[in-house]
Length: 280
Length: 112
Image (cartoon, rainbow over all chains, first blue to last red; front, top):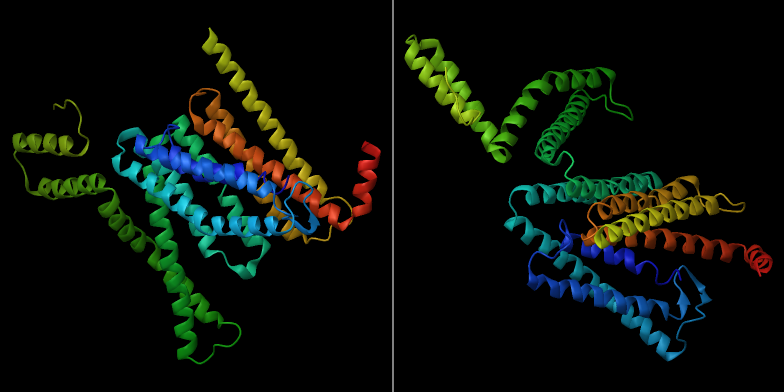
C-alpha cells in the first residue's frame, strides 16, 4: 500500500495550481492538462502497486507485484516517467497559474496573490535551507509549507483578502532591510577586524559594538528609502498620493489666497483619497 | 431540498475525513514513540512536521467543501491530506516491521 497511496498527494500538488481558485482550469483548453495529469496519476498508481519490491523497504517483496523481467521493465519505465513526466507536469501547472494571473482582475487576482505569496515563501525556504542544519532546517521548511493551505483558505473564504498587498509590501521592505543590515553588520565587523589585525576566532568586542551602532544608525533612513523604493515600484498609487501631498504642503507655505487654497485642497483630496464627492 | 441534503452530506463527509487525517497523524507519532525506534529526535520532529501538513490541508479542504461543495479544490485538498496521512502510517509500519519482524508477527497473530 505504501507503494501507491502517495499518488493522490502528488496529484493534489499538481492540480492545485491549475484549478485554483474556482475549481476550474483557466480556460477550456487547459482541461487537456487536467486530464493528462489525472491519466498520468492513474498509470503511476497502477504501476506503483505492481512494482516488484516495497519502495520503503527494498528487501521486501511486493506480494501484488510483477516479478522477473516484467517487474524490472516496469521499474525502469516508471522511473523514466517520473524523471521527465513529473517536472513537465509541474512546469505546465505553474504556467497555467501564470496565465490565469495575467488574465485575472479584482478578487481573483487577490486570491492568486495569496497562493503565490505562500508558495514563494516555501520555495525561498527550500532553496536557502542550509543542508548542515539537518533536521531543524527541514522542520522549518516543512512548517513554511503550512502557509500554503492557510493561504488557500484565506483566498477562497475571502477572509482579509485585500490585506495581501500590505503583507507583500511589508515582507519586501523588512526582508530587504534585514538583508541590508545583516550585510552592513558583517562587512563592518570584517573590515574593522581586518584593518586592525585583531580578527581571530571571535571578532573583537569593539568591532561588534561599532557594527551594532552602524546598524542602529542606519535602520530608520534605510527603512524610509526602501519603503519609498518598494512603493514606487509596487504601490504606485500610494507613492503618487504621497508625492501629491508633499507638493501641496510646499505650495501651502506660499499660498495666501483662501479661494485658491480651497480649490487646491479639493484637487489634492480628489487625487489622493478619490472620494465620490468633496466640498468645503 | 435535494441540494441542501447534498451540501450537508458533503460537509459531514469532509469533517469525517478531517478526523481520520488527525487520527492518522497521531498514529504516526505513536509509532515513532514505540520502543526500539533508533531515529534521532530532530529527524523524527522533521518527519512529524511533514506529516502534520495533512491537518491544515484537511481542515482547509473541509472549510471549502462545506460552503462550496461545487469547488473541486475542497475535495482535492481532502484527498491529498488523506493520502499523506495514510502513506506516512504505511511507511512507518513498514519500517517498524523491517526493524522488528517478531513484534509485527505477534501483532498479526493476536489480530487473527
